[in-house]
Length: 168
Image (tube, rainbow, N blue to C red):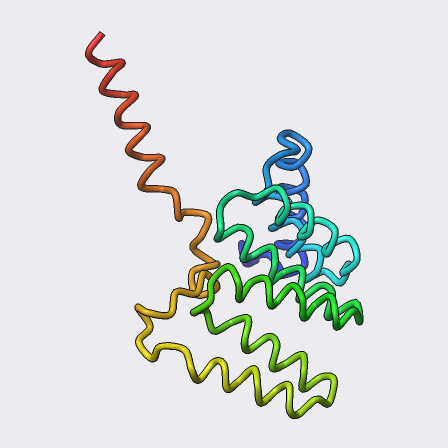
């Protein structure tokens, strides 16, 4: 038997873990945002939108706000709230103006609405972004690794504490 669980099982475990994190620390914005993402992936778009909205409002980290906006847009789009989805994607663009993902999301949303002109405009804005990847900061590219984005700072704090304790 494989030790790798199904996607459904993984989502269930992730949802339980993020829900527990929110329960233990209600102001933990990133846990709310990620819980919203999992809920949306599991088809519970209205609940997902609320968690993404709450997390985005509570967050102080621009990267977390960006993810909240993108996830809110995705959940609202899936729930059929296209105008709210477009607003969320535009918020993501405001947070990271050189990111390509919100432009692609806006274009896809316009295509879904049969709005060829809107789709073309979103893609045109994408094409006007700097060409070099280093110049187009898009947190979406690092989403899978973002749980470790603070690792260097956390390890530095840990080592500093350890040095202080060992010198006593």
